[in-house]
Length: 137
Picture 1: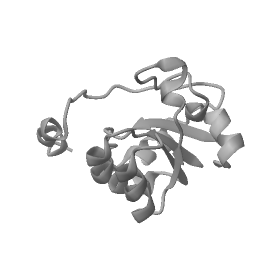
Picture 2: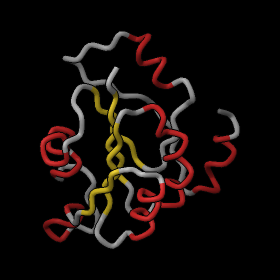
Picture 3: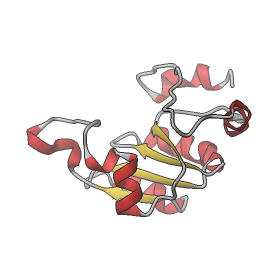
Picture 4: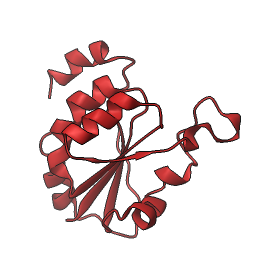
């Protein structure tokens, strides 16, 4: 299974520094999308040898922050513009931590390429708030 990740991280580098090294092994390629001013996210991507796209698409039309609808966040656009390998895409945010057997579950599920899939997740407001949940994995 060729599994690729597009991860949005704008000013969540504290989460990314923790989640990216843990999530990275699941994917054939990872592209992290951040804004042009998020220096810490760019630094983490450089250290972990992950492709990082810098864009201000999040603020188009005067928006304070708009994650969805921007071209850089669309897997098809990312594939064409940034040479992300084809097949399966997982869209993550920096604060998502995948379980250790994530990819094995996807392979066992025999997913159909004509479908789009989603999953539940716990919502937390800070890295500190995430700590008790992380310890349960």
